[in-house]
Length: 157
Image (cartoon, rainbow, N blue to C red):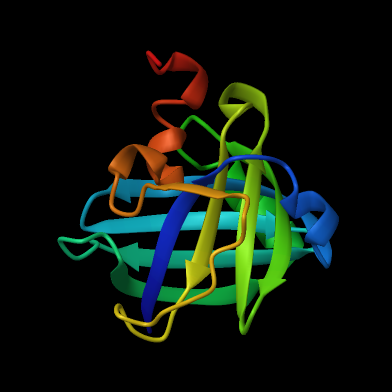
């Protein structure tokens, strides 16, 4: 139940041609406290409820509990969420033995693209595709829970 992942920006949209799947995701947060984040998500035709704990100091790992719920329940729970629903399209790209999940944000976060790779340990190595850019692991402003409060279009770049 420990999630280990690293996050990166991208340098191009070349990942789109390499993707083996593409899914729209809409998600909101019932709670965005740093010690516990409670997320409701509709991914394609499925609903999910997820609880995440505080990240470690490096931002690479944290507790994660997730269960599939009925999509009607997810839609009802989204109405109870804090302001700032996240809307994005996720592309899954196989690179070596890993799957990169590349999120292309829409709405108030349009223009932001974040790639994540889940690992089995914090020191696990992985192939880096040509389109992978700056690492942003541990940078809280890239957490979806924070993007719901401080959208990308409000950042001073």
